[in-house]
Image 1 (cartoon, rainbow, N blue to C red):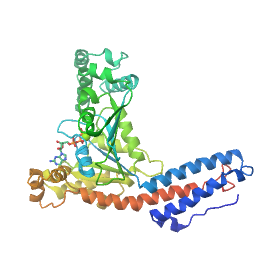
Image 2 (cartoon, protein in one colour; image 1 turned 90 degrees about the vertical axis):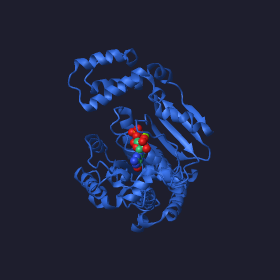
Image 3 (cartoon, rainbow, N blue to C red; image 1 turned 180 degrees about the vertical axis):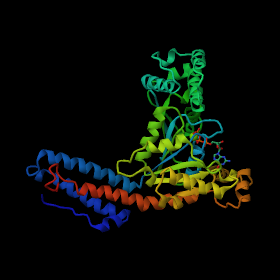
Image 4 (cartoon, protein in one colour; image 1 turned 120 degrees about the vertical axis):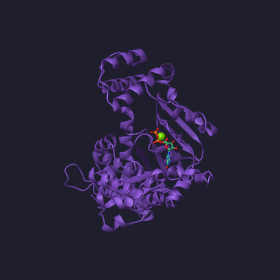
Length: 409
Ligand SMILES: Nc1nc2c(ncn2[C@@H]2O[C@H](COP(=O)(O)OP(=O)(O)OP(=O)(O)O)[C@@H](O)[C@H]2O)c(=O)[nH]1
Ligand SMILES: [Mg+2]
């Protein structure tokens, strides 16, 4: 074929603008190749391959041009994920409470108009997940979820004497479903709902935090003009790893894989990692770029305000990250940041004298950690992550025909 685009080592060190300019000319080149004048010399199957490459290149172009930065915020239940997400975006969009209050996976992205879309489970999906939960507590049953009652659940549990604490949480979740059976039933299979403007602060919260409604919700996508601190970011806030809802776990895994960065929220006051966290990380494969989650991981040691022995605890967290192979050892030092999401929210609200801020100061900690992690992420996005994109583009350039004997172009 006529053109061969060799990769120069310097491609990887190009900045965003240079990468875009080069990609632009390559896209034009492929578009020309696909133009009518070359139709006869390029076979149909090669044309199809070129179209697929063009499609991928156009997507890369869009992502690099918009500088879209997808970040998932993950952790155990009640670690402070939603509080962190609010502190990070500089606004109080997501509900956070002492009791569990994130029942649904929510993504937030910048938009000039405030809109939220709410998607519900189908009855089939809900039923499948309900039975998965039953199996986790040792009950095998074929009846539909809606035929169950709280009384029946209690009777079944009494038959089984050996329920551990993890299973106990699942029993609690199943009971919560059955107590809210009627409202959940009314929502399953409903078509996607849209809310706009001020409804985002009122109605939408119910779909995240009120179990009677939220348990039927599969996903919420929010576009908000309040994502002021980092308008190119798309944040994914999910229920904790220890949520017994399999669909949430699957969703978290998918999001972690497709994200440019993953922020793990851990507790600076309780530094030992529990089983659910370790097992969850073990269960996530490398992403489409061949990158392991650890390579794009940042760890926020939240609740530094209540940590009594912060330095020792941070050391313990480093050891846990290393020993469980959650993150490459050489990245741990720069990617572990301690702070307090709650302190940042108080500061944003102008509550200078709040007890959280005071506790941080008393410990001699003068940063809530939010700006530090945001700056680190921005640098990472412009360097490491850009280079991952450049390497993917490089692979496209090197793409060969199936017989590997000829270059595609
Ligand atoms: N002291 C202190 N409390 C915090 C901090 N961050 C979050 N919290 C509190 O921890 C509780 C749980 O926070 P959430 O943000 O709801 O936690 P979550 O991980 O989103 O919870 P789920 O999504 O329900 O699993 C809330 O009461 C927060 O106010 C912090 O830095 N310091
Ligand atoms: Mg939450």
